[in-house]
Length: 137
Image 1 (cartoon, helix red, strand yellow):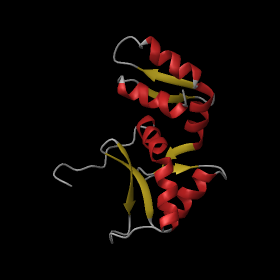
Image 2 (cartoon, helix red, strand yellow; image 1 turned 180 degrees about the horizontal axis):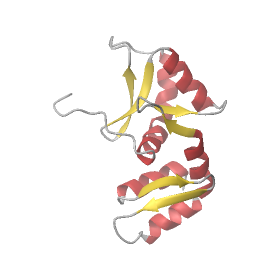
Image 3 (tube, one colour; image 1 turned 30 degrees about the horizontal axis):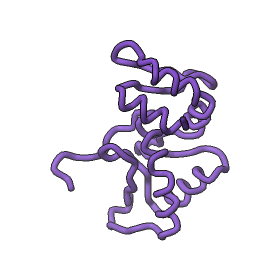
Image 4 (cartoon, helix red, strand yellow; image 1 turned 45 degrees about the vertical axis):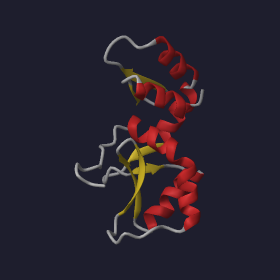
């Protein structure tokens, strides 16, 4: 099971996962941690730690990545165009911070689409606020 799948499973079971220090994950469960969730988190621990160390929320609650990897480059390219990846409903979505209803170049949209599930799981794990406002569609 991948880190993204383990994080999604934990979320579905009401378990919050976060980074504790540089090499440990912490989980908060409303009750006893279900054994299948513990197994998934334990098996994917190195990958989960790596993901949670590379990503953070910026001051606008948007996803940000460190390092010179593909994720950091994609998020930086989007930010340079005034687009941010934030948490809406139950998934990662793109915001036009310029407020003009624009769409980024298609290659960037395709890259975002490939990572949308991962980014959604990370935004949940980072406890990003849900930007969805009641009554919006």
